[in-house]
Amino acid sequence: MYSYGYQVNTPISLPGGVFTIIVMMLLLYAGIGFINRWNMFIKAGEAGWKALIPIYSDYIVWKIAGFGKEFLRIILVTIGLVVLTLLLSLLGAFGVIVSLIAWAVFLILVVVITIRKSMRLAHAFGQSDTFGLLALFIFSSIGELILSWGNCTYTAPAQRVDENGNPIAQSGTMLTGIFKDIKAGRAIDL
Image 1 (cartoon, rainbow, N blue to C red):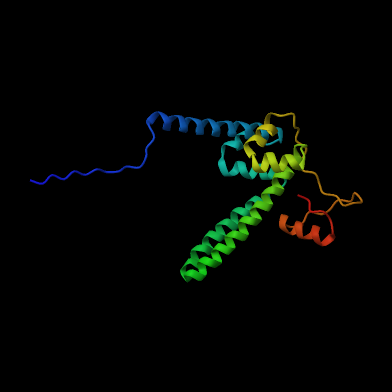
Image 2 (cartoon, rainbow, N blue to C red; image 1 turned 90 degrees about the vertical axis):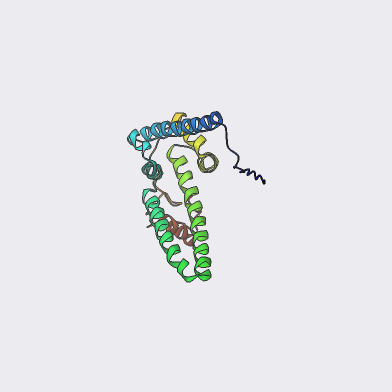
């Protein structure tokens, strides 16, 4: 007597061909990224196969820029913040607010450190600060493409010197180096 019809609204789906094209383009992008890093590593005197291991290849890029230990510290602090966030979530709203503040401070520090790394990587390949900021920090894929296939030669990260040409001893971390530069009245070496 009664007839009920049900219509299920499904989310928008992509036709199979479009999905395949998107996956193929992503694989092509990843492949080009691996090839760029491979060539950049060879220019810097590292083994090319290191570009194929995801987190390790990032460490090698930081190492080429002269900041290998900073990358490891960032990874360890990230793991520590995740654990701290989980523990603070047990405190309710107060813990969540403290966690958000800690993450905000951490993200700001990571951005500053990554900008320094990008500029030092540019210097290691004989490029300018502007190249480091624009090409390696903002448009990193294009910057790595230029470093890999461009007319750049790797010269190890330069040791910092003061106004008289005397070498400045490396500080414990990049962040303490910023504070020591400010305290000594020197320009901050990005």
